Image (cartoon, rainbow over all chains, first blue to last red; front, side):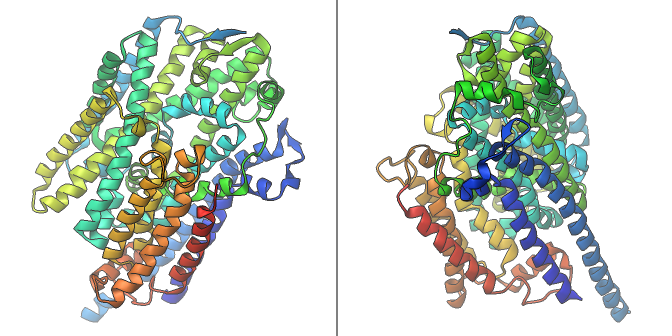
Length: 93
Length: 542
């Protein structure tokens, strides 16, 4: 179980870093792919408003997912460490 | 075209708003002083702040006086790319929390330097404390000068008198309330800032005939033609792709190591609460920042429809309020700008106090009783504030103009120490000190601020530290990793079993220790390869 928990921790961390960075730097995609710059949304050029929306609401949604997933992971970790402590205290008795 | 400058219609109304705000700050400080009975209370608000209050306080600590004044001027100067630069600040606290905030909250650290001391030892902690204090003084100094100038303009006082009045008044309530006061005051200040930014802007947009008055932060699309009339190239994605990438090493990696932001995560009532604080932080900060972008557009729209030119762009939001809103609203917006400056100074001074009074004193006098340490902490807080006021009398130009540049310094000299210390057991103490000092000094040397004939990059990218950080941040990561391998092989200050156990503990493993955990070779090797690529890209001509 502890091996799975360790892998899960690393996977979660790498995954969320990889998702966070592009959400905060979304304008880079419009620079990398200039053909995306054509349209407009709510009166703004898309390459202006989309990075603002993604850097606000995209990040907000990801932060909610992070809170739920990582808090659940903490519960699993707590469950594992308390089972270990119970086992240790059982051994000493 | 007629040039317009900001003049508050009634000085007494401005004074009344500022006095009321200060009365609230002092009341919160006095209430907080009664709750402060230990070092945990003084530096971490007893690890007790709930998610909404902490999310607001995170936003207030991050958003400085610049959000109300400087940002709008910079939007005109750098145009859309500056908005892109500003958007990514929201990554700071989510990344910090994910990568090390919750780990350090688990060990109940007061500042990131508390972790460095336990992980690498006293000498390494002193190096990090020096870097962090330097950046915090630069930061606080910029805010203090801004507040002094705001009071000078508002009340017609000479700058030095304005500075002393606002400086002493600010330091008073911060020193009185410690981190409890700083947290709840910052939460209140963020509410004031959001209301002052967004609500009056709605009335301004309605008066100007904009259909987006119902939600100023995002519904200002009909002002786009006004912006294009003033600045036809506003939306151009100028600069090459490297400019956009360079935002990551300088401005995303740097704020991760800002101690006053990390301390907001540490004050959380629990690790889970810290993660929910991040959600509220993004919501509130997005609202405030988007409001600032709207003000930039509204300023140009104002010029386009009235023919009045705004003489000083950093006064845009104030001028719009004086022109369109009742005097009391304009005075309240001034209060919002003052709150923005104060909330950041709050955080800066608390960080300096934590670093000097908590961490450094813990190294110099480890056996000092807690109550005495707390008194020294208060003293450190007060002295840091007074030094900031004294520096603000005659500020070195380099310090004032280089707050953003300091982020690259932190990204180079501090971020690798924290991140590798938390995630890699082989991170070596001597390697950390050598890479932090050498790469930090290299960053200073290759900037245009010290030796103007040795510079990587040119113009604004060099002045802001973007080109410098693109070279020294990867260099710092790579040298730290390579030297760690080397020194550990030579048995020079190799991490002890206790150091390694600590890493497992802060990740939540409790008593369960596993040597192989956080001890791989793949992650550091990949980092070295990525660092080499970025370094090579960074040293190409800009």
